[in-house]
Image (cartoon, rainbow, N blue to C red):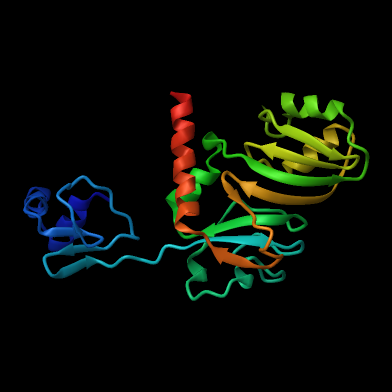
Length: 242
C-alpha cells in the first residue's frame, strides 16, 4: 500500500489531505521523514504521523536451514516432523518455505514471512540457480552432460526443461545446476539417462550457500547482506535481459 493511502485510511481523510500532511514533513517512515506519498509501505515498516504511531513494524524473518533427510518441507503435518518443528523462535508460525525439498532430500531450505522476498527467489521467470549434489545408482555416462544441457521434454506438463549444467565429479556423483523447480525434476531427468538418484543434497539457492558449519537440523538467521543478495541478484538478472 502506498504511504498516502496508509495515512488517509488511518485518519479517515481524502488522499489530497493525506498528501498535504506528508508534504509538510509530518510523516516518518522507519523514523525518517518521508515526503513521498507514493512510497510503497509494507507491514515491516513503521509509520508515524507527528507523535502518533500509525503502523507498528512487524518483525521480518529470513532463515536458512540444513534440512535433514526424513524431515518434511511443510509448515504443519499431523504425522511427520516438519522444518518448522525444528525452529525455536516465537514467531515461527508466521514462516513459509521458499524452496521446498522432498522428504528424502537434504540441504538448504529458506524460510521467511516476507512474501515479496520469497517470490523473487521462487518465481519461475527469475530463473534463480539452484545447485544440487547428486549420487546415483549407476555410473554417470559422459553423454549425460549434453543431454542435461539440451533439456528434457516432460509430457505430463507439456514442457521442455531449461538447460541444466551437469558436472561429473566421480563415477556416481555429480553437481547439477537448475534454473527452475519442477516436480521431482532431478530424479526424472536422471531417469531419462537410464540412471537413478540415490541421494540428493541442495548446496545453494542463488547466492545463498549452505555453510559447512551448519549441521543437519540446524538453522540460523540470514545476515542483512544475505537478505539483500536476493534483491541484488534479481536486479542483475533484470539488467541482463534489457
